Length: 158
Image 1 (tube, rainbow, N blue to C red):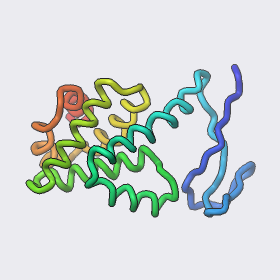
Image 2 (image 1 turned 30 degrees about the horizontal axis):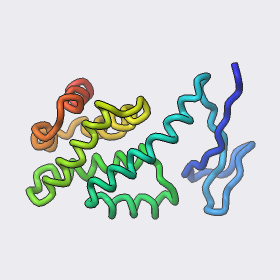
Image 3 (image 1 turned 90 degrees about the vertical axis):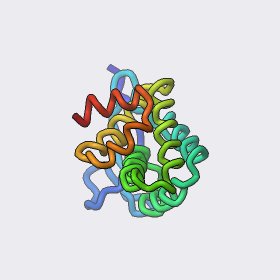
């Protein structure tokens, strides 16, 4: 099997381990081993584009994204999608936020229906799994969801 590695940044608050160095921003640089089919590389390329389009469709998420970048110095798609889930949970019952929440859920539905595997994983792992135990929010959010998103919520959250 071919040895594939990808240099990446990880926001970790530990001292550098063997074969790791700190970059100029104080983040640890290390290596991530990829699977035999290089799937991690594929995930790295589709998720930022997916998030860029989400921000275009839902401008209300821009302040959350800006804070995410300040906190992490880079886009961490799975962490940001958790932020999006927390936004949806917090705003589920707010009538003024309903259009933005509905737009988020509509875009996630599109992602599940037509997106690449890595986009599906991003949505399921980092959005849907953050809804576990959020019974009150789910009562408000579920009617706004498309069938694919509802199916994932039912599979994971019940």
